[in-house]
Length: 420
Length: 148
Image (cartoon, rainbow over all chains, first blue to last red):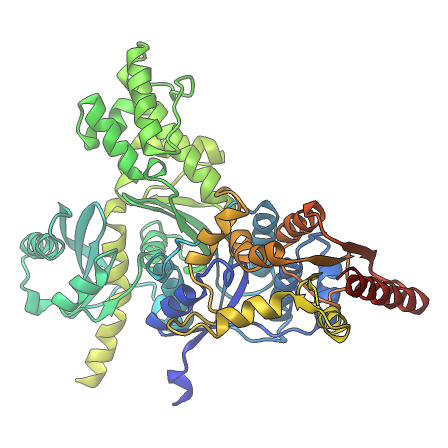
């Protein structure tokens, strides 16, 4: 095997994974994305020294070991392409260590890191996108460094709620397509057709195709994509490209239909990220429920919410979609105006994302919001108030994954030209 | 011969001491060996599956982290089986290291609660304390023989 074919090496810094019975899930998810997990080897004296140096007085020996492993990587004694930090869900001691280690690694190294909390039900499919993103950053650094789109390329984002397509030519968007996701392949075919019609091109005119989103593998195979890549890296790339923030730091927030992503980006390259949504209450799905209950289209929810001052006075808890819906019903029955309820729903989703996701990445300006939910002004306003910053929503924000796919896949245009 | 639960359960020194005096040490080696030698599934390194934290519900509630419940699935049956216990408080990592402090707290509590002969000692800080430490363990194990 040549050096180039070596699998991406991801250091596993975990506490409780083996005893939760999910070690096999971690290993198999890594193998699926061409990565190999490994435990950084440290000696007992390293554990004692690292624990003392780090200064966090934890009691669990496995967490002391985790500190020593992180220190060995940061100090360059052990090489890794990426780091996966994880601990048991609901363990407060481990949550503190996990967060502090992530911060320590980000501040002291350039190694991409993802942190996660698991339970025994965590499966390989849940871990796949996270490990794929770590692997992508390590493996496709050159491709990810691309700042300008060249040739004629297409990006298709097969999301859980909607399917989007973008066609770009010489760094300009010339075609778009958007449809709710029903049948995954049919939705993809429809959006491709819409984008081709708008651009006046045929499929044979496209030089390279990139797919992302939940249906990326299926759609990618169907339309013979050159690039099939998870949405964490693709969306963050698309976001900094559209927001013209490819140099320096940025934070990308994508509140999706099924889960949310928060990504720290430096010079256009994702560094640390978190992806979650314990319950659909903290995702865009709750806002869809809200618009249905209020009898307005989702596209009108943003304008409606802006008629209110912010809705913070309306009791609303979207931590769980069932209780959130109950809050909606109660608020309307109590006589609150629909505009206030709409704003309260936005505030609640922003609050959940802030509490559950944004604590695990370092917020650095500009904060860029993308995805379909970024068109709901009340949500953007609530997030801006929460973070005390002006949130940037770039043009075509709802097409972000497709834009990222079209941009990154243009790296294949040069390759094809060379081969020709 | 008595079945003696050792804490820390990973301590090879304790395990060896118990075995030398003719008793059966109950610790990690025993429960993990059972898991590793179970045919039919492959979940390295210690062959635990998502079913183990479910089994652990017998000793810890569902709000308790899965890692603790998984560990309890290993140690809980051994505590139930134990006829005596040796507990070493605040042991050095090299003496026997058990990864999760919360599991350790629960385990020590369960051992203290169970009505059986117990020896609880502080981990020695000097050579002299070490000699006394071993002597006390030896005496405890010999007395177990007499009781039997």
